[in-house]
Amino acid sequence: MDAVMVRSVRAEDLSGLEQIDQKIFGHLAYPYFVLRQYFDVHQSEILVAECEDRLIGYSIAVRSGADSQRDLAHFLALGVDIAQRGQGHGRTLAVETLRSLDRRGVKRVRLAVEPSNKPAITLYESLGFVRLRREQEYYGPNEPRFLYELMLAAAVYSRDRSSSAVPR
Image 1 (cartoon, rainbow, N blue to C red):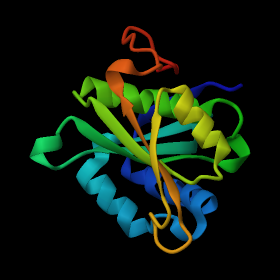
Image 2: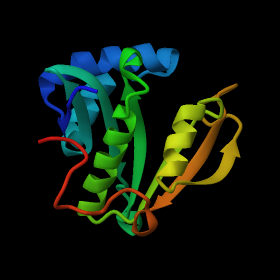
Image 3: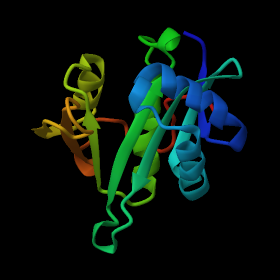
Image 4: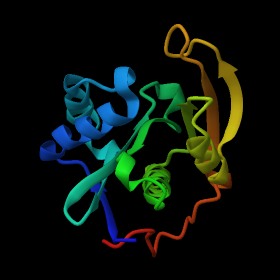
């Protein structure tokens, strides 16, 4: 497996991020303008994975804006280029995302996953996410999702900040 570097997103990454998102999520992919808005508002909360100077994945996890829930973040997206799957890149991105949230004082992380997406479900559950419920039309008609939550204090990922899952 080639070395993967996880870093903060840059403006020049947005086109590649959009291409990966479109391939993975099809009609539910974020349009470019939404990715640009996320970048403008939440740049520090978007990570990308590179392998040999090529963008191969991304994650978007944003902290709740509600003052009463500043300890809550929403893991909005995790995507790895289809050709790069099965090599641990999704896990690397997820772990680095959770570490970043933990460093910023987040205590709880929520996400939604398609019930048929077994690899994602396996990944999230292996990291300590617990299924809360199924919502039948979460993203509209015929778009059910399992909703998950993780308490970072109980997370399975390594909390050792002296080392990283990826080379820097």
